[in-house]
Length: 69
Image (cartoon, rainbow, N blue to C red; front, side):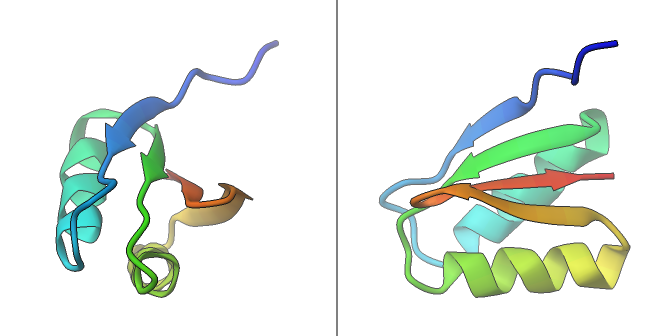
C-alpha cells in the first residue's frame, strides 16, 4: 500500500498566521497536507496547530512541513 499523495499548500511569502490558516483549511478536506512556508515562525506555529488538534507533524525539508489527521 502506498502513502497518500499530500495536498500541496504553497504559503511561501506569507507571514503567520496565513500558513497556519491555509493548512487548517486544507485539512478540512484532505487527510495529508504538505505546506511550503518560508516565514521563520511557520514551523513553530504549524507544530502547535498539529499538537492542539491531535494531528501528525513532520518537517519534510527546508521550509516544507507535512501535517496529517
